[in-house]
Length: 101
Image (cartoon, rainbow, N blue to C red):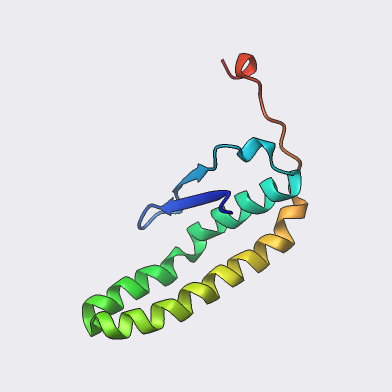
């Protein structure tokens, strides 16, 4: 169940985060963890830049083989860091549509 996903802008610590439709109904713990996890991708993105460069240099076969292992390792590391940092964030209070206007 993917709660959120992030697209990192190349060369910047900037990203677009997409939240699932019912994100605001999730537990405080799930919300904090998902947001921290996705924000950490801004810092981990350089690992993927290296992979993309490797594909151009060494070809698709080597890229595919290494990408599968590296992707899982990056996701596990990102998630482990999020598990430590997320509880340190304050709880989120969602604005009502009237407050947001």
